[in-house]
Image 1 (cartoon, rainbow over the protein chains, first blue to last red):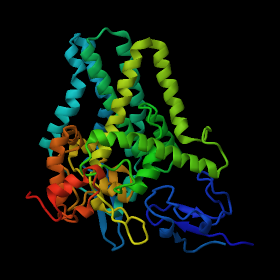
Image 2 (image 1 turned 135 degrees about the horizontal axis):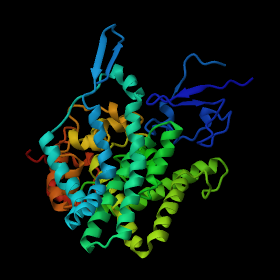
Image 3 (image 1 turned 120 degrees about the vertical axis):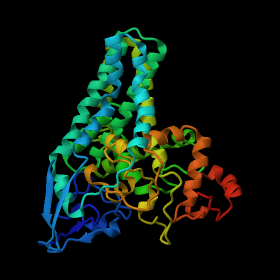
Image 4 (image 1 turned 90 degrees about the horizontal axis):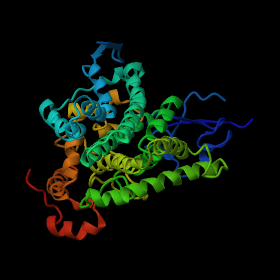
Length: 61
Length: 397
């Protein structure tokens, strides 16, 4: 089974969950964080870039 | 008065009372101010009352800022979660939404049914325009929040000034590009508000539609689709303003044009003063440095801050865009304005005075110290500015 991770915006706490994707932003379930565009910014606060996101600790697989 | 209390990480009890708690009710003034003109006129038949709302906005508000002064009070960080969970503050932002509709429709019915002198009509149309420009401020506060209710209320309130694209443009465009030459909503040194408006209004519109088109493309949807969040708000505007046209006829044409223009002009005015000349430096990788507190101008004036949901504590807003208005903080040594926004708008409307005062303030900032390379300069004014100030010149305070 593939492993889906969660990535958290350190500014506002928005979480990108690879298992769920982000329907509003147009990323389907299973869409990997690494495949998000390089200019991806946090959909909630828009002041943290893709490279700022941190993998969530205590990930459940 | 509610007392917030928590045991913090150091095992110390921290308590806080928000002295401004009940004063936040003043935020309901902006939507309803033009009604003073309507009620005053109906009660006395004196057309002077039609000008009263503008006087309250642009004479009384700057004077109250001057008289009541500044407020540097901050909530303790450990109590911010409690303050943010307190529904009272949220209810005030919700309440302004119907108030904007009530005031706008009341004024429209009033000008559609009363015989008014042309200057009284004009003054009231401009006043409701300004008042509904502050609907963009409410839309701003609500549009940054993550609940479905609040984002919908943002779209609904932005429909009054017919500026539905604002929250997409602002959240995803302005916050990303703020204080860079790429941002149509950040003013450049040497750029008058009038030239800025010609760049800002179309630039913001275009950026919002581009962001929304990209998002919908990812969902394999066309840009003209009901899921387009700009379009959703525009549809409400069309229904609202078309109904008024049908109900009251041709008089609504100048009324709505003046109203919409001045609503947009309020946002242009705020955008103009919030980041004038401030510049994020470009890093070696081509990206701009992260937005720092010194990339926004701030005002701590208590009266205008209460009317504007702390919008003037702008540095903290850009650092923490989802933070609710009641928890926005003052910090020392930030670029600060000598008056609240109402007074600063008046200064901005006279470019020669604005440049004289603000260019000197800009050059004096500690992170600039006269270095013109650290300022966002209008390319058309660049030569003249370098000639006038030379590099490294710091005007006396």
